[in-house]
Image (tube, rainbow over all chains, first blue to last red):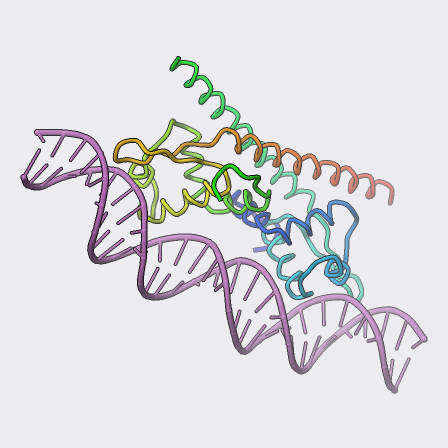
Length: 110
Length: 110
DNA sequence: GTAATCTGCAACCTAAAGGTTGCATATCAT
DNA sequence: ATGATATGCAACCTTTAGGTTGCAGATTAC
């Protein structure tokens, strides 16, 4: 149940559907791997909460952790991130056609 | 608290982070406005559950409902959808740079 | 070696999510 | 009018999310 299997879009969306996690992703996007302690420093919740959020993100395949000495470093997972990114674009494009369709329908009514 | 105010990305993601809701959005993307009864026909939960999901989507600004006779028709909300779409693309692009950065870091290490 | 740091594990708590059922109400068809 | 449809509202239930605290185990710094 780790980061390797295919993740459903819903799971990825759900993982991103939380302010704290979105913040973690943003911070990891802007720098290299970071320890839990450091990530906690910038968050408004306890270390345990941060840890849990990281695991949620990991389960969705967005980040991955690795041990280094006494600290656990977390970083974005390029592969799953790419896939998530493509999913977002697929949906986005899907909406495009939906919007086109709507527009056409409205114009047709005139 | 209706569809007019600005929605946080997290809220939109959260709204999309559920299989049933994703399905509803997909169905609405593929056709015109649909009544709750009709939407329920394709779902695996009760009408009430569908109604609740629609309200969650509406609160996130993704869909909107309108009354027509005895039925309530739901459709995608073009405006908020556009905005959501742009948010997705922003994040997606943000990830792109993050991935570039990662790639560069790895190459630099060789 | 000892103290300070960084984490993991587990128990526990509260609020919200997701879902159901029952009943009332409005609208449509005949 | 009457029965069938389509919803809305409200109460209720169970599971999960998000968060906390306390304590034990490693690792690192001195």
